[in-house]
Image (tube, rainbow, N blue to C red):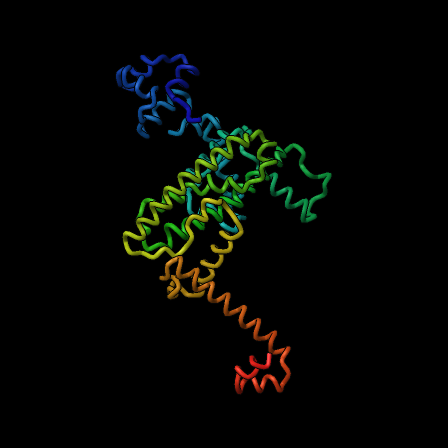
Length: 329
């Protein structure tokens, strides 16, 4: 839930609304408007956060992590985690944007976020232990071992990374209609829909509310369906073929999305940016072409099986006059 910064200031400091108005150089009426939900500009947010004893412009993030030092430690933790991901999220999103959103979202869904960013030393010791570089007796038990939280974050990144990359490939990077803001809006939901694939047991063990999670995912699917419909309409209005089943994204992360990312990246590296003719076919034409390919594979398999069953004499008769063999049967 977003923090009402005016209420936060009056509750956590000695300042009243009239004091806030004087310090901000505005009327008490304007402060009341902010309190009631009127948009607050970026610079004004920073000023209000300063009055509240918070840093930056994002009140919710500042309240969650308490100080800039801890915020920086969280960024370092996620960069450390991300570098080992097959599909790094920071190739597409700045950590200053994605990390606060991820942790605030988990917090709003009930997950207990550690007060301090997890220690990178913990991971390094775990790896050393697994590799036999240190003895178990030398394993530092003083380090925070919030293993469930570490596992949840790994789970989130494992689904978020491929989903984000697939979204960019489909709606932004490789799309002829890449100037459309709709494509970028769709990619912004990659984390939200990626949560559909996380381990529910670990999530609930950390205080996560399953009903809130499901409601958030369902709401995300509704938004994505609307945006993807708009995106497809934009393609058709610009005479651009629909070459993929874009609605796959609404089901969240899957092995199919990961496979498609790998296939596209493989094609790119081998074709050196050149397009194949199939890149210009519509989605329905691609489906028909792939169906025909599968039929040909089945026919080839059937021919090989028949070849092993026919005698040499019948093979010769069949090659000379196929109808003769059919009449015999």
